Length: 81
Image 1 (tube, rainbow, N blue to C red):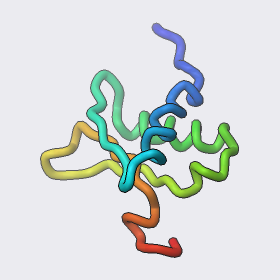
Image 2 (image 1 turned 60 degrees about the vertical axis):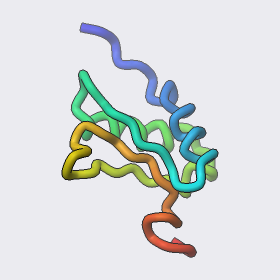
Image 3 (image 1 turned 90 degrees about the vertical axis):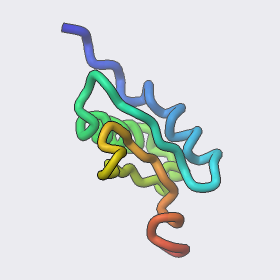
């Protein structure tokens, strides 16, 4: 069994989401996307970087059930969220 990488390995994905207007989406394979989303939240917590507070992770439905979306809160919840 392969060792689980440190969650902070995935911080570049969060950085990329911050660089965009809305956020990013990507396909996940070989791992349960719930587990991966939780790993992203763990990376966010471990980083202790206030920039990441403006991000939220989604598990979309419909034709996107193999994806994880990392979006800015203000886009989903409106300004002042």
